[in-house]
Length: 314
Image (cartoon, rainbow, N blue to C red; front, side):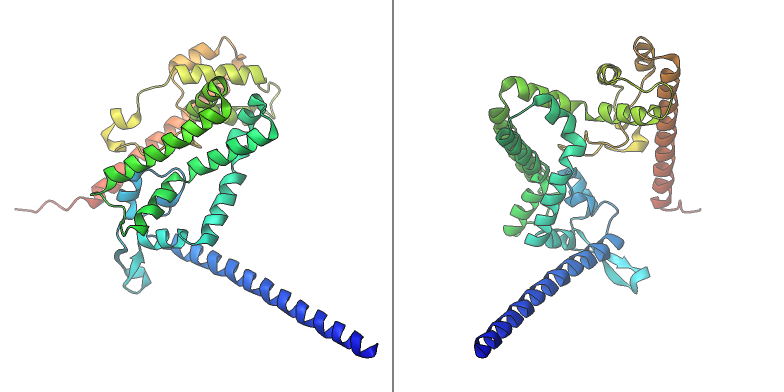
């Protein structure tokens, strides 16, 4: 009996040691991934290098943001080469990082689509399938990059068109699956929801500001204001102001935290659905957005002036 108890204790001890070792290995992997992420994010070869691997990246942003495997020398790091796009892509190719990013993408669904999920009222199985397709669509750029890397290709200006086509084809196939999952009517509702993401962001910003006032917005006011903003879209700033450069963003460019522009026409139409105080709040947000755009324009102009070589003197 004593011998049996001794064997049992020894077995439990070995099992506990094995579990502790596995836990230590897992914690070490997490620390390693976190350290690599912080190291890479701290010294990117280009300011947009990290964004090139995120959901909102477009082929244009990727090839402009750092396609080279090794960046130029950085004097702040003792003359060592700065990390380039290849370092980011290689890190993102690991199964651990893919799993972490997929979990992150799924966790972000509600922040963007909760209202749509509520309005569609899908059965649980259909909702889960729809959510997975949305996650798949958010990772198409990363998937295309990984596929290109397996073929020995690094995104650059020479193959940007090829990459753009691959991303568009992948998104089109996922859209077909979404339409098949939802049906025609619900798919049109989804498309409208996607196309009004910037307007929804602006309205949510206004709702938050009015939430602690004496005149919070009603759901119907919010819906109507989204419609007004989506029908009074101004020309693209990049098309009217060369200082802003080419607009960027791919399939998820509408997911813009700064929201949609607010035109004078939109403010005038909003007076029919908003109180005077609520209209004043909308005007204040417009002024803040205009100031933000002006600041960005001046910063771009100043940065462009710094990059220009000095004019030789006679």
